Length: 253
Ligand SMILES: CC(C)(COP(=O)(O)OP(=O)(O)OC[C@H]1O[C@@H](n2cnc3c(N)ncnc32)[C@H](O)[C@@H]1OP(=O)(O)O)[C@@H](O)C(=O)NCCC(=O)NCCS
Image (tube, rainbow, N blue to C red; front, side):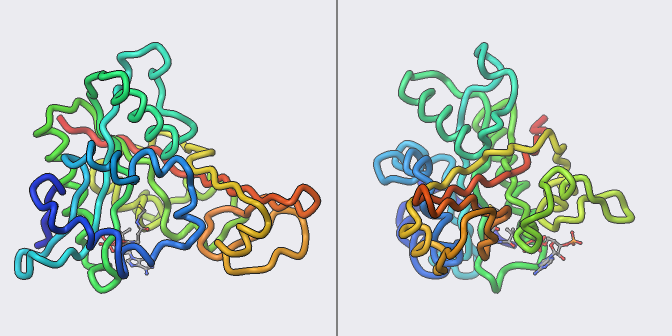
């Protein structure tokens, strides 16, 4: 049984979360979202040690087998916070950053990522981690837990509109996407699509590097690992990726 441990409790594991397979399994372009720095840059992450986690196997507790991140923020208690942001992952990181800067007391937690080493996947471990994160949110006194979920199989059909994709159901009535299904099985409710959850813009030269491909035409271009096509303009010398995610609410009782 895997365990979730905070970086507050296990600071020694922090370097492992940003090295080797755990870091390199994300496509390069996914590491170019400028908003991410407001959470992951060292000085910012220092402020989130109670909600940044290593995933360990108690049999070998000095080696991280996964990582998980979440961010505390204020929800509902402010006039502009009555709804989860359409800007999803980016939006909640910016809210949390503003809350922290202004000294507000958070009442909600948003998961940002759960990643397991490939050899630890497909064994139901993510459900254990999700439940542990929810228990942790409860123990910290938060009223809500949310997740801007990145559907793990959407990249296989980038031209399918995200709304159509999210509505697809198995014969049991569960989402066909495996990761959304884990969230729903764990008791999560799909709230809405966050259409502009991560925005990653760059010049054509930058995007060519990030995606390891040449862009020879303008338009909506599929890029390996991207959930939707990238908007490419050779004439304007830029490309913009706007990733949709799916807001899921988890009751923490
Ligand atoms: C997303 C992730 C955490 C899920 O963890 P996991 O422990 O492998 O999940 P599970 O073992 O519970 O599998 C979930 C479902 O996906 C299915 N599944 C597992 N591997 C699969 C694959 N390669 N293709 C399709 N379905 C797969 C499982 O059968 C299961 O389906 P079920 O609901 O019918 O039982 C893990 O795959 C991962 O680390 N992925 C890379 C990072 C990522 O994308 N994280 C999510 C966004 S932050």
